[in-house]
Length: 91
Image (cartoon, rainbow, N blue to C red; front, side, top):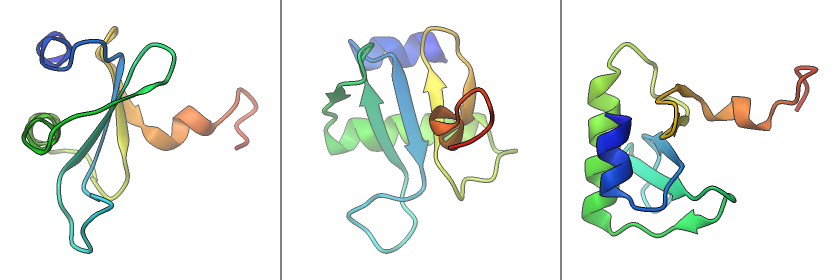
């Protein structure tokens, strides 16, 4: 799936998926894409929803209360909070 998403979002290295669209007060699939240097890659609404739904449906075992990051180079999906944790385990 990571290879398909990399083709769908050219230049993206990481995709962050959640059920919290900042523009809504109710749960809604949401995606942000980031390049290799962490720059935000703009997605239109249709692509944002499609990518989020693909990832969420591929991992129904996860609790989608928080955001998850999908590394498109390795295919590893992990909680987004881990991106902000240093090696000592502190934020």
